[in-house]
Length: 145
Image (tube, rainbow, N blue to C red):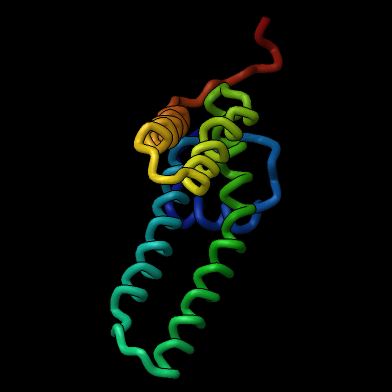
């Protein structure tokens, strides 16, 4: 896959959000991930900038912020799932590995009760996910024997 510009990567992410077939190159994946981090960072900064005042208005604003964060996360979940599947396929890995390298770590982090070993395993699996996403593309030709 050729290098993809940031605008093209985000456009492809948002227009082909249910396309679980095909491939996504490294540049498309990393530009899209950077976009996700920027959106998440903006929400984080917005939440941190809120004053810690307990009033009806502050509680209502915090609720609206939380709903906006949850809606944005829900809207971006499908595009990033399809992007991940396409990136794994492009790297020559089975998309079923996502169950081990993404979903299992998040389940472990959600369900754990302060166990350092469980946290270490979860973060190790997430690191494996990042390494797989950093692998170069594997081109499969129809004419290769």
